Length: 259
Image 1: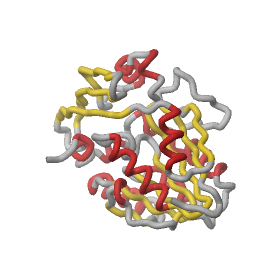
Image 2 (image 1 turned 135 degrees about the vertical axis):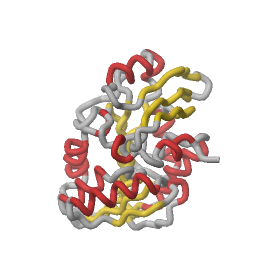
Image 3 (image 1 turned 45 degrees about the vertical axis):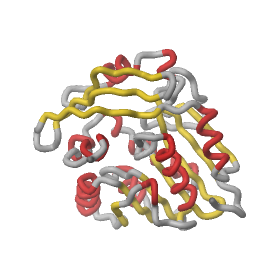
Image 4 (image 1 turned 30 degrees about the vertical axis):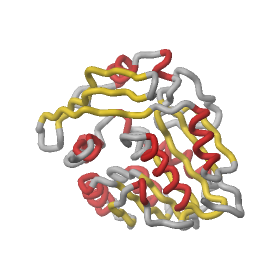
């Protein structure tokens, strides 16, 4: 049986690119470039690359990028877009819980809930972080965004998503946040690229900063920075608050050690 995130992305590439939360690519890539010192010799791994929006933009800027995703439908769209924009990117169908890479990349990115934290168990989410850590060279860096567990303690997730959505985007109903597991359960309503109306039962894990720090430190990361994630405008100046729906995590491994 397919999981909800597998069903969602089967035929959703074009619609995905129209969602509100995918419109910050340029500014997010500006931040990534700054974080790696504009060094074009570095190899970048885009985990949960989806339709390739970050991979393609970084490749256009001269970086060597490998994009991995579980969804063949999303990868098909990514390859089409890369061909249209005349950039060479190694797009691979891979499960982020068990990536085949070992100490190959200088930077791994996982943006816009690219896999983590969509998995059905905490152990599976941890496997994604393990895979990302293993893929990095000594001194490598991991940059990712994830759902901020502080936000649902003070706000309605449904009200936030409803306010941000625009006509034609996916919408959520029957949302309930479980304080024991920090999981949000909801019904996702959307139309796929062929116009078929669909309904999926979703479960997403929200994390608090102390959990993320502990998980990454246990994987050998030396420094872990957690910030507020603002769409298209990531900045080290934005401290994480209860107002941030997402958190931006920047973790570095020690120069002489890799996971």
